Image (spheres, rainbow, N blue to C red):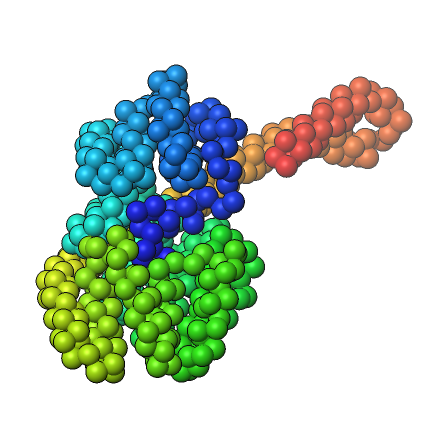
Length: 489
């Protein structure tokens, strides 16, 4: 698997963060990181720079490179600068294979950032501690560290980091043959990356490849073919994709029992500069040789793998190799060597069983964490939904109150309009009865007098002024009523 042999070099992180980067790190990227005001983004860029910087420096230049890195921390007044310094020191010691010194520096860094509640740096440092513990064969410690790192990703609410830590956890289960648990965490990583639209295609390639590894170990040919095709269909031609595709290609040969084809393909890949040939490929080549009955070649390769220092703390790998050596000795009629190899396999198996018990215990605790996290998420969702419901109810009540007030205002307005209309009507009636009818009666009376007079012309002349006066007053009264009616409109 991706980190199986090269955990010491923290290969998984370089896979995700350092695709085709220059050997000594990009000075411009460092300057850019130092200028950032966003503390979270600044820390991410600095961590990536440090890992890239040490990851590509040759071991001969590592000491001077470490001195230059310390100068950077001295020149720049960084927040948590001491923590960054300890982190770089741990990677430096790791490259020198000084594992205890690397852990000491990281534990000190964790203690510092825990005081300042810097959750991102806590995540990074705990993850690196887990890598070192995994390299040492300390599965219980590695899973516990990943478990704490996972809690930090939830606090940070960073989907990419949550997916990445799930991939790391799945790798521990894979190496101890807990394939279903490994697939569970890989599926969680994939779900998170899809749900939150994580724009990191390299992460998806790693997930597909690790799923392929599990299905290969489980002997599920159809599933392996499916994920082999997913890797081939990937549009992101990132670091190690070529290796993932070629390795899963010969996995298909092995599951289909095409051992000669697998042997030929692995030998070609051993000389392919684009392919990252690892100890894992040697193990698979040995298995292919064994199944092809090329026993001496299989034995030679297994012995090479067993003397590799990377396998010293990994009984989960060594017991299978010793068992295979025992089978080879049986086929070669070397009963004494077979007994020795099977005895070594038994011892490694016991060590592995003890670790399996520990891993199972932590697995249970992690499941409880997952249940707790799921419950907390449901509670948070419920709180959000409840808040929205309360807001909807409040808005509805305010709307009802507004409509009620609006209706009451309209009703009151109409009521007052009716009162005003009644008052105007009464006023107009008063004007009509006291002014118009009065002057009209005067006019009608004068006309009646004139009509009954013997000398109408003389009578008209005498009444003309009164008639004109009454007509003017009648006109004024009519205009007054007209104005009142216009004001009422």
